Image (cartoon, rainbow, N blue to C red):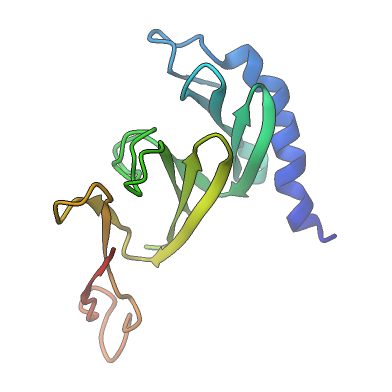
Length: 177
């Protein structure tokens, strides 16, 4: 198995060792930051952790259920709650199925690039519901109709640099329902 595929698993195990000591120490018991690591408590059984490894320019997003690692993914920078992240509160019902969800945004770094959104269902079984790569455009999760599910607004970056500068590139609006 290539090193790149083993790295997130190894880092998640390191994060798993650190998270029990970090979780629940925030003022409101839901969020804190220690040495670049961030944790969120979804409910009494489910925790989300982002471990930062400065020397590797890597973060690992991990989801734990009953203090066992359920899934993890490595990348440059992750956000699940915050000003530049997906803008959807952790545990919101994104899909409209009555089950809380997690939207994690991964930023790849580099000049005006790239955002990938991971949607996890946090039901009895934690599953990855979908992955949305928006390249340079980013995305907004909004309710454009009367259904409980959110729609995703973004731009089609297929024409980036097409006969012009990046700033002037055509980027038509796209809505995923």
